Image (cartoon, rainbow, N blue to C red):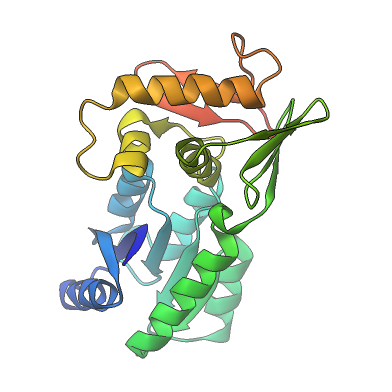
Amino acid sequence: MYNELILLADDDPELLEMLCVIFRRGGYGRILMAASGEEVLQIWKEQAPDLIVLDVMMPGMDGFAVLKEIRKESRVPVLMLTARGEGEDRIAGLELGADDYLGKPFLPRELLLRVRAILQRTCPGKGGRVELAASTVDLEKAQVQKNGQQIPLTARELQLFEKLYENAGRIVTTGILCETVCGEFWQGYESTLSTHIRHLREKIEENPSRPISLITAKGLGYRLILKGAER
């Protein structure tokens, strides 16, 4: 079973249900569904999915408009689906920042293989270095480089940092962070989360009492600011 949270978006209820079945049979137990562009944006903001499968041809706000809005704030992986399969559509989606493009009809196995490839390529937990104002986080080695020192991250700290990094610049709610660490039964974990955040700040910030990379959004959650990005 995979742990990634997948958002499936299509205005055709039968196809949406089919997509859900494909992903569940493929080992994805955490599935969200949306039937319109507006619903996609709402769920994306509230739930912070790890990947979005986005239909192009939706009434009202189409997939291109949705992707454009998402890319203003997030690098969440997006695979676009279309019934037309036109080259111009594919180019338009990729220019807007889609990670891949698949025409309908498609083979379930091909869809799952493409999704897995995207997640392996884009998921920060698979490796990479993250530059912050006072430190560099090596995700593959699970350690922080600061002031010439190598500081190890615990498994919980790494999980939290990865979720924050996936949504860099955007508020990640306390509930989502707790669920990332504990699963769906996270209620009551909030105080422990605060402790993990404090320890994480001690490792990545120059002055943990005045953080500039891991910011608190009072009453909501936390936001990670990458080096050179606007606060």
